[in-house]
Image (cartoon, rainbow, N blue to C red; front, side, top):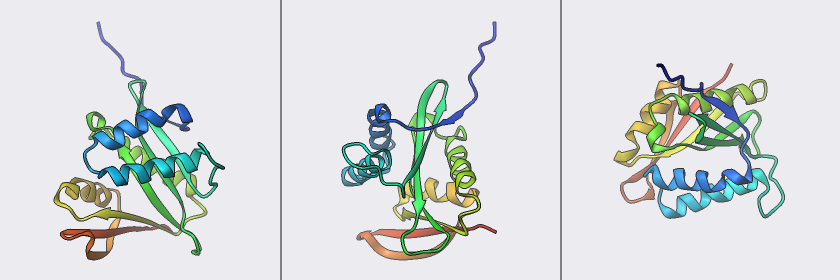
Length: 165
């Protein structure tokens, strides 16, 4: 007897997803507590939880095997023409390596097509972020700059860009 696994799907996020988003963001091991708090503030603003919805934040979630397995948030960079920031992309630890992150990137790029010329991603230079940096590079993002000791001593800011068109 064979068991079929449902194909991954992208869906809108809702307020009911907040506990799962918080858990996966905390448990992935990449973010400090203050960073998780910022991620949740952005999530809340994107969905209008506890405040007016911020139209400059767009989000999507990915479902694997019937469970929310990741989320992303992006938006136009203020005071630019055609530049977008990828603010957050998180995949639950147990779901990493299954294409969820790539699917979320592809969904973001699909949704902003025609409005974007440059996508900017800021990430950390800490050693535990090496897989994250390889992930971006695998999807066509290139290092544009590095600011040494930006986040903390020994923790650089690494800025990736992807030029569109």
